[in-house]
Length: 247
Image 1: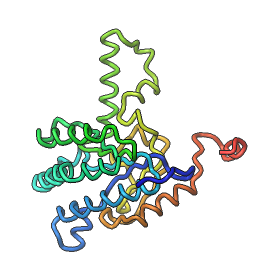
Image 2: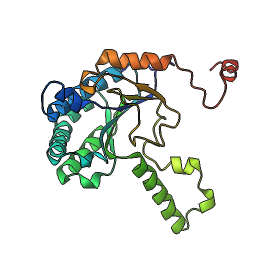
Image 3: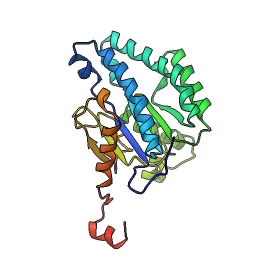
Image 4: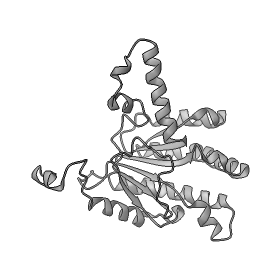
């Protein structure tokens, strides 16, 4: 299912999947129909990303702010999440894809928490693409949790406050064991990160698509990768420096 990663292919793609509600409302339907259609797009995007040789695909499924949505919508989203965990994990496993979920899990039902753990356990040894689902996740929460863990190490005498630097903090945030995010895609025309991977997106390239998430097909994904391939990532250096180093 995977192809070799070429130099112009991002190793790690993160996507803010936006536009489900607007997609449904434009058709006179309830918002949950947009979320169901969006779930189908998740499936096809995972397939396409694997075909293109992407190593890690991180998807923003449910933010810590999404609990503020109407109760019936949140309930429907939780049912959809649980259904996906029950039905899709074995398919991912058959294709050697690993699944991880990041975010504060304690607010989810016991059933969802159990299925998340089961999915991670089943796919942990897989060597294909790594799919990360961000659920009840927020970038500020992520950094605060990392800071708290470092503070606990200082309290226990395992670390000095003076030893805390970017490297130590970066090692505590989510995804620290994975390649850095190369490309962040947001659909639906919105141009903000909405508390998504604040630390991890520091040097990512951004691609904003006007396409609503349920309509974000393989061609739209390929277009984002093509745009990325044209970018020059300078990391604070000049173009001349990169050219001199052959980068």
